[in-house]
Length: 451
Ligand code: PLP
Image (cartoon, rainbow, N blue to C red):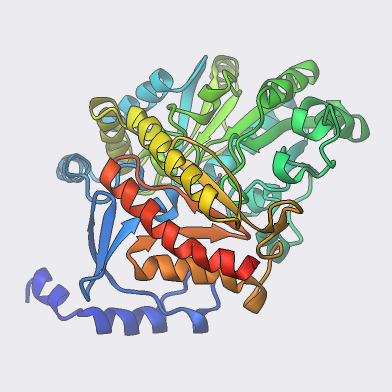
């Protein structure tokens, strides 16, 4: 029996049954899972065994920036597999060295050396440990709306309710509010300390002892929890406050990096360079698990004289690094960043048009192909269409919108009352217009729920 004979006995029903019985799915009650068996994908589309096609307006977990089955990615992984599938992290390996050199090239400012991990959480874990070693301090300031991953340290820095179920978490994390101008935690007084950034951080530091704080970690553009680009000046203000106290700035661009915002990195939109940049997802579009911690010249210099107390069996896995190299080459050759900017503008224009017809649209915000649509019951009061962290019937309108879109072949996601629109960066104008048309249709559900 050949491998393909074995594969052919796995029809959709067998896959569904085995998945239901044996696979533990993320963040789910397993009894409620009824996952659709997926047969394939190409570019911005994927399809199931019944022939239903879906326009992937989520890029899966906002990671498949280059879309499904990019031939050059597949080729690079196949070529690397034929050459060398694995060699330990402490040998010098071509793809690893090449990707690290490319990272120094494409990342902003003086970011230089990289440590490669298997994903975003692991990269954040290493960043925090390194920040503590470099500064000799313990505390980390993180934001409520940030998501940094599901491992112990990363979930401790995460502010959203997924953290509740991991408690007690490791100590040493202090939290600050996010610059959510539409629903400001400080009521948005003028000038607003929270949305300016520095003044809010400064106040927290005075109560925490700034000399005990190793790092501030932020999602440059908050992804999961509301899709919130920071207001102008915010990141500079945080950067200046960090510099004042010798605190390292870690920017988590696991979701926002690699072209998603219409620039190579989200921080490029604000001319701010972090001390440590965290990437994953779009780094190689998730073709093989990969994340990276990239550090500036000063920390690179420190690492030349001090031991790095971190490691993983699969740190800098050759297949992952080869796919990372291919991904950066494709981004350059196919002008992916430019396409993200251009298609982002087209999507935004379409959404602005929808706002004129759908009173349930409270705010549209985002950069490039990282767009969010916040739905409200009433534009004047800004009452959210569904309450924060709602489950069951209270959350039903958002679930109904996502389900109705899927029925029409548009795969999108929502968190609380915000729809996240994050298609692959290779998407074309026709598919953007198709999505806007479907959104026009399904947003009627929101208007009705709001009425
Ligand atoms: N940081 C951000 C901003 C993320 O969005 C995610 C995942 O969604 C992570 C970190 C965690 O990455 P991973 O799931 O690869 O561990």
